[in-house]
Image 1 (cartoon, helix red, strand yellow):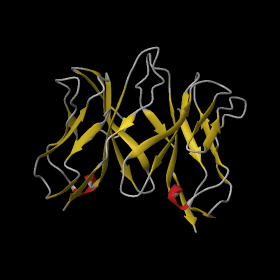
Image 2 (spheres, rainbow over the protein chains, first blue to last red):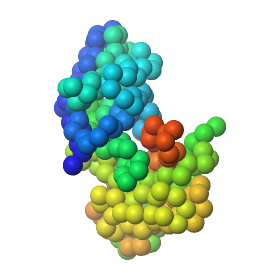
Image 3 (tube, one colour):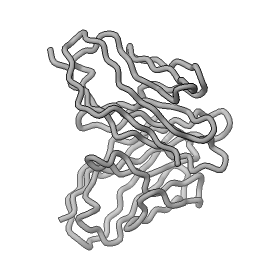
Length: 115
Length: 115
């Protein structure tokens, strides 16, 4: 079945460091890919998305490119801030027709940024 | 403001006492879903609904019920809660159809403790 694998955390970085959180997936067809972020005590917020191969999603300085050849959707940010400390989830959603429409999540990666 | 609301945000109850967690969205979305989030297990889908009066089981439906009498509301019912249903619950909604990218919008979460 469809699945998402994320790098294990926690990831601890100093402010202004470069961030990469790896995400790979297995899926039939051509899923849409997402990164969600969960700040402490809050719900999940959509961070960015990509709906087809080679699409690049970007938001708040974060980027991820949909790589069909490597089935990956790695999250990157050039310079992290303390306020980026959160749990990051990679997720996929299959085609609508004949699908449950559910999101399949990775396990989540905790990012802690120190001043 | 487009949003998904859940109530209550926090609930402590005892084994066997029926409870309902409400979920409402104001985006006219067809699709709604419930997830539970547990440490080490990530997010798992409980039930989903493709439209009014159409519901189906997700990955972990045991011990839960749902209904979808109106498009905007999708309550989660625990008829006889047990301690293993202690968890953080999220409601989500999404547009459907060809023009949708299937991204889901999440509520703020309901932290349930069953003693």
